[in-house]
Length: 212
Image 1 (cartoon, helix red, strand yellow):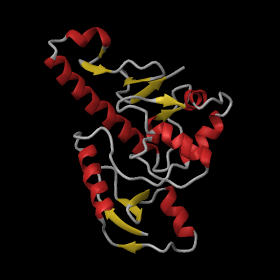
Image 2 (cartoon, rainbow, N blue to C red; image 1 turned 120 degrees about the vertical axis):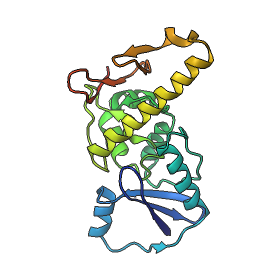
Image 3 (tube, rainbow, N blue to C red; image 1 turned 90 degrees about the vertical axis):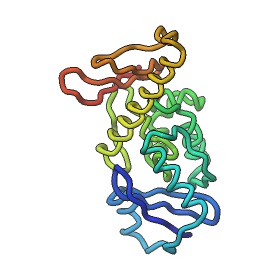
């Protein structure tokens, strides 16, 4: 396996590939990097490749607000159940969030929210597989492999750039889409979502979320 380290607005990231597929993304000082340091060293070679360059380019576009979906060959390694959860995570639209319970119901096992949470926390490809878009049923942000500060930053990035896209869309259609949107304080447009919604807290100016 080979890797490439890159800088990002949320800290350094290590991109890891096996052949022509991306297998992992580690946050500097994050959970996966700490676990790897505590184990026998992986057989990793610091060497770029086509898939790592594509990943770097697409991450740069994502952080710049120019990309909402990733188009990369992925090979996330885990159990069959984990891979089912990770596949479902990839369908959470940009600017949206969902809950562990909702994911469990969509997978056909309403009682599996804890198992879904564990699988979500084991996601080896954060950002590309957007596990940061899953929150607790009561609105809690819960844990994140890279730390809650990074989770908040990613959610804010999604929301900010999604709102910009909506504004552009409203301008293009003459405002006819306004009946599908809610205007929040400060004239910020936020998305209506059947499972959860992220919006600014007027008093604290922080990110809050509400769900079922």
